[in-house]
Image (tube, rainbow, N blue to C red; front, side, top):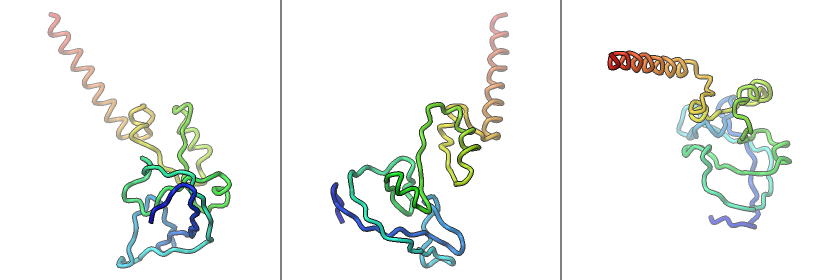
Length: 149
């Protein structure tokens, strides 16, 4: 099926379920051959008009069971489940934001970028990083003293 700009699509809005748990985009597909296969619960049908097509975004995993659909905020207000990508002006406030505002929903942070910016909350990684850095500084100081004599 080829989809072009201007096409109108009629899509079923459904929830993915496995037993009593609602599955999300980061949960892998569970086939009907599995012990507890996933099921789909129909909620409604909706018409969408294609206004553009883009390559797979970097935040969508290749093994994701669905595709990313970017829509307006009116559609989000009525949705039972949605994903949002947030870009902040001040990355230093990312943890304040998640602690204060993102408590009602699940969220995933880009930990690789946060580590690079020294904003990671991963205490084990931070301890390892600072320990290795401290050892390197001590080694450099010791070697510098021996060579200066």
